[in-house]
Image 1: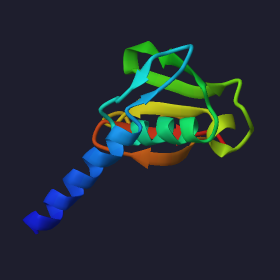
Image 2 (image 1 turned 135 degrees about the horizontal axis):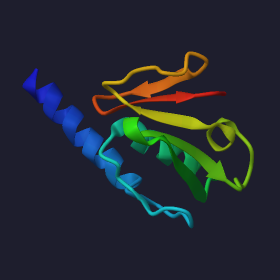
Image 3 (image 1 turned 90 degrees about the vertical axis):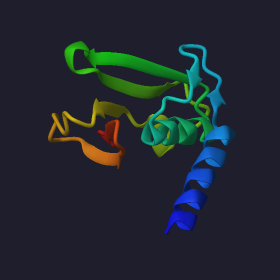
Length: 111
């Protein structure tokens, strides 16, 4: 079991190095500390998003809205709006669909 866990941790570190920085004119995006958010932003960048819009929509609850600003081409990752909600809050907008979860955040989309 510990051998499996070691391989899993090593693999996740390697994956993080591949998407450690995604250029953006709106924000400087680096590792967020959340595997879910890193994956969302990594996929957005890989699918043609060069600039991110990151807005706080509920300051007291730390809810963020993440979207692509002027994507190269339209697809799920570049045309969707993503909502990052702290894991201890859970779903606050019932019309949103879950995308991913980790111990830090739950990420939803309206697409």
